[in-house]
Image 1 (cartoon, rainbow, N blue to C red):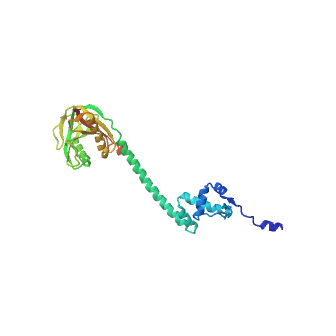
Image 2: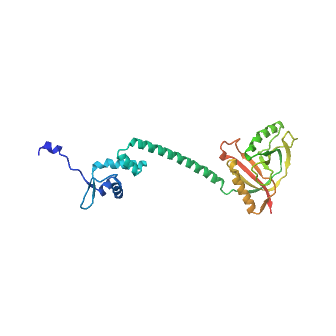
Image 3: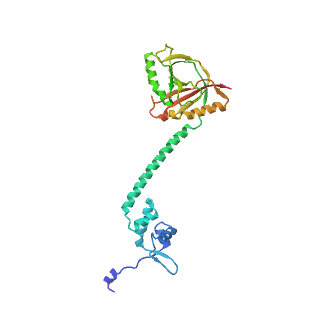
Length: 280
């Protein structure tokens, strides 16, 4: 045989038993057998005498394509369709769209979890403090609300009336709402919007003045967060009052410490709920 003929003669293919081929490609023997059964990747040669499966190096790109497509998220059925001549670009574009849609759904779920965690924070056991409330002179407007959201619609008008009456607020500031109904009401709510002032003055339009006597004992809770979550703190303080043998003897107050006027983030708003109480 000439050297030329020897150089152009093709070498016989190198066969790899299934265990070696699996190890070469970091897949399991079970996976290769399954691919064989469903027609996804057939061995190059099967020994009829013992049933051993053999693979060759030319099958490596085929297997790597299967692994890559599977890692992207394609099902074996989709991979089989691609390998049988399906338009791989179209499949990839479709999968990209599906993944982007899934990311959008996951982002929404994460946002929902964050929102729920914020609500969970407001459900933590409230620290109820018992303390007296001193006597105070207040400027106030008595109004009837169609709903709780209407409360802050009246405050700017009250501010104008106080300015016209040349009122001077006390320091530290004590601005609060006093609820004058018995029990909870969702509408037709009677309230007094109150501001502690230095001195009592004659009535000025809807703005009136009066002295509030001291409260010997009040159950108080600091509520941090938007006003929509106030009912959770109300529930906590009322439960404390009932479970510890107290009774409510006056109108509850909401004292506004931080709010929209000085904090842009509602999660930072701070309100103190105050219930006048006594032992049963």
